[in-house]
Structure formats: C-alpha cells, structure tokens
Length: 115
Image 1 (tube, rainbow, N blue to C red):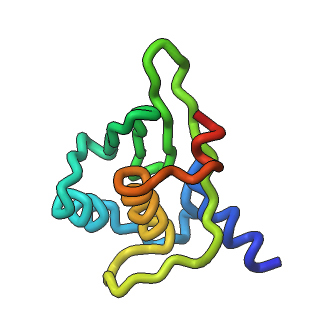
Image 2 (image 1 turned 90 degrees about the horizontal axis):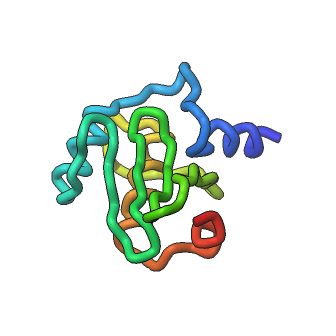
C-alpha cells in the first residue's frame, strides 16, 4: 500500500506534496548546465513526434503539435528515484529523468499513445 501512495505522490500530472522538500532552482541549474533552455519554470523539448513542454514547478508535461489541442500527459514513476545529487526531492529527480528521457531516447509506448 505504501508503494501505491508513493507512486501517486510522484505522478507528474499532479502537484507535489506540500511536505516534499523541493529545490526548483537547483533542478533548473542542473538542466541549464546540461544544455537545456528554461524560460521561467518551463522547459521545451523539440522532437519529431511533438514539442514537449515540462512545467518544472508543477510537474505538468504537455505534448504540443501543430493544429492539435495540447495534451497533458500522464506519466507515473515505477520505482523510487535515486541519485548522488544533494538537495533534490524525489519529485525533482523524477522530473530530471523525465526531461532526459524526452530529449535523448526513443519515447516509451505509454507516452507515444498519449500524443
């Protein structure tokens, strides 16, 4: 039961729990250092399938395509994230891994089916 609650807490389309320690500025700096462009709290990733907009503050991920309504994607965490980066909450680590996934690899079928 604990794992199900945990997964729901980290669901990207929802808000992070208020009790979670978030370090948004640290997350943004890590992404900037990796070459991503951030405007305010939003990061855009251009791909052939769609342009993905990641709201780093709220955790929303949208797929934007020409002549289509934007779609908010539902992406859930399958396991607890871990990294040796100090100062980031699990939710921040999840967003970090999601950004890298959207930018660098073949998209999983669960995301392709939503766009």
